[in-house]
Image (cartoon, rainbow, N blue to C red):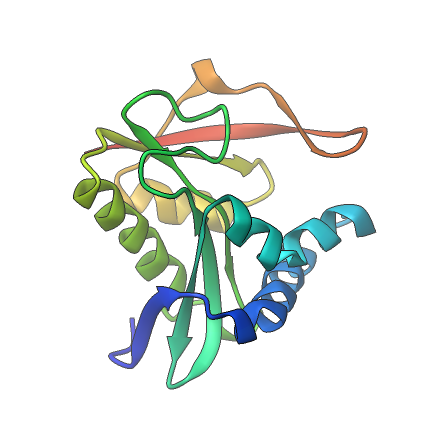
Length: 167
């Protein structure tokens, strides 16, 4: 991680840029995403209405984002009582390999500890091998009992892997 990396809540004037970054990162990593799903990834204002969107800035440049719930809430049915989930962690392709994804993940773990959670959980598509390597390196483990098809867009289902980190 670079010493100039800052993680903070997204500002309203950054919603469009954060949305473009998220959709662009997913488009870069996944083949065949439909426009409805890409539009949902770009909808930072909609995500802020349902939780907290964090941004990573490196030297003032937006290089990553992650979506977490507000204290006491959950983003998805994956999270059980005492757990915090996160979604849509995205790193700009130009910033990959510099520790941005790790810093955002560690930020989520820190939030969870501060909020008294017992575990952090998340889903990831089977194609995201680089992300899986990061999560496993940080101490996440698979939760196969929580894996089932998830609708990511109307009529589009993915078999997502589930991961957990016990705090």
